[in-house]
Image (cartoon, rainbow, N blue to C red; front, side):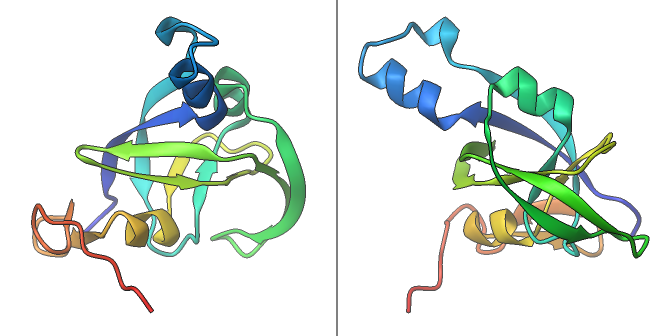
Length: 137
């Protein structure tokens, strides 16, 4: 199947809230559209330090991450970031792995947006077509 890429837009959640409250202009809401690797083996969203700075996301904590090459790396955890993919969105914290050069879209945001990788074509699609369905317990 190979590597799957998709375009996503990331937005600073707190800027978005300030805009809705009339505290800042729409042009002041920090966002970025990036190409991400769809990584079903990763748990969450991974962003670069450069992207974290561009979005103005604060580091709220640290965790140890296990990378695909088997390394254990201390990485920062950001405050919430809004992830947009076509007509879907979710809010997640992101991991900032030192030296990361690629944005990874992992299993938790994929699941929350009801997305799967179509094995035959290697494209990202809605698990239930155009309808977003979630498991409610």
